[in-house]
Length: 313
Image (cartoon, one colour):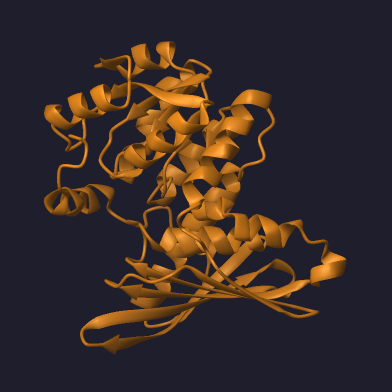
């Protein structure tokens, strides 16, 4: 059983992940470093209730103690900095979604990966059984994919990344451009539509309904038929954790590459730019280096203000 060192427990993911891992007996949360918004009572509660060994106040020291780092704070702007101590010790690191929020951090992640760092991630939906079952079908059987349509609720980045990563898993082609199509405003809630072009003529459309809970729905049209499925969110965390455990046990990485994870971020950045311009196609390669991206610290502040204490029991 390998040991996980978690960096921040801002979201509910460490709580949910730990419960699953303790049942599977393949890995466990063993140590914690916390400089997020969760206070000492919740950190102590997580340590006690989930059998962690100790709390560290140095990322470098925790990296020595564990086998892998899980970066799970809700400020994505700190992901790269927090990952580096593990990478420097030759340890793999899992970056919870989204792996980055701007071009600069995407480039840093790519440079680290090109230098040999093992960076795993990100959205659990990418590894959903419904997605893997579709991809397990031979192209001869399912046909060639022409368009994928996906839905998501919540917000355009922290939740939007889920559906974009799912689409990118279903379409192996390189994404090229994004166009904001338009929006609906129903009772003050906004639903936005984006159109993505990939290499070799493949396209995708995704809808984000802000401020509403929505199912993750996929429609994939192929040259032979149309596939439609709804992601069972009750199974996605286990699917993700199984992939991580498989890598740790075998050394064979079947998870998304850093370049693939970055592609999903770039799609959302290009879509935002297109919307701000009132529509029109935005090439991913044309996103400027100084694009502000999405503000992780601002998101974290809002998340913290709305958060309840979930780690005491």
